[in-house]
Image (tube, rainbow, N blue to C red):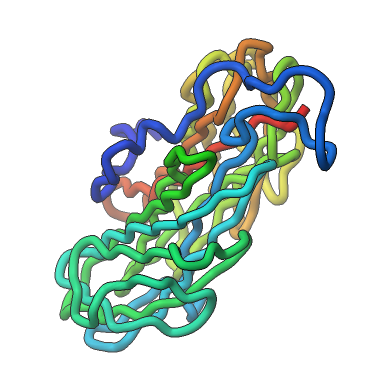
Length: 301
C-alpha cells in the first residue's frame, strides 16, 4: 500500500527535537569508581513510553470510565530523573482521576481536557514503572487518538521519549503495530535486529495490509531474519536505506511479527530514532495505524 506519510500527532512539547543525543560519547580513559566510565550518559539511555487500556480491547463506551495505563521503560545505561508525562486527550474527552500505580506528585484536576501534565519531582520513580488514570469519553462513534510523550532529565539536560500514539475504537476493527530491538542498544559498526509486532482488535477480516518503517540515517537494511506467522511477500532489497516498505498479498493471521536485520554504520552516535506505521483496508477506504516509534540508545562501551 502507498502511504500518505506518517500519522499526525496532537503536538509535542517544545524541545522534542533535542531527544537525540549529539556528538561522540565524551568518556575517555580507564573506567573509574563503580566500573562505569565517565562520559555523557544521555548517549547511553533512552525512555520508552507505551499506553494500554484495562480491557485489552481498545474499545470505549460513551460516558463510561475508561482506565488507561502508561508504561515507562528504560533502555540502556543511565539514571534519568524528574519525569514529566504530557498526555493529549482526544477532543471532548475528560480526565477523571488517578487509579493506581506509581502515582505522580502533580496531576490535573478532574474534568480537565486537552493536554494533561503528570509530574514526579519530589521523588524519582525507577523505570520500569507504570500508573493508571481514568478518562470519560464523550458521546461519539469515531476512533479516538491519544498521543503522549515523557520528558526526563539526565545531567541537568532535558530529553524526550518516543511519542506514544494509541487509537481507541467505538465499533471499528483496529490494527496496531509496535517495535522492539535486540539487543536494546546498538553498537556502531555492527548489526541490530528490529522486530515489528502487529495486533488486531475486532473481528472484521483484512483485505490489505502493509507496513512502512523508517530507519535512522545511513542504517542499511540486510533482510528479514525471522517471522511469527506469514512473512511479508513484498520487502525491500538488501542495502535499502531510509523508508522501508513491507506488504502481504494475503494478509497474515494476527497477532504476528517479523524481524529484520540492519547494519549500523560506524558514524552513528547518540540516540537513534526509528518509526513506522501500518496501512490496512477492510471493505472501505485505506486506514492507518497509530505511529510506533522508539529511540534506541548507543551501547555502553
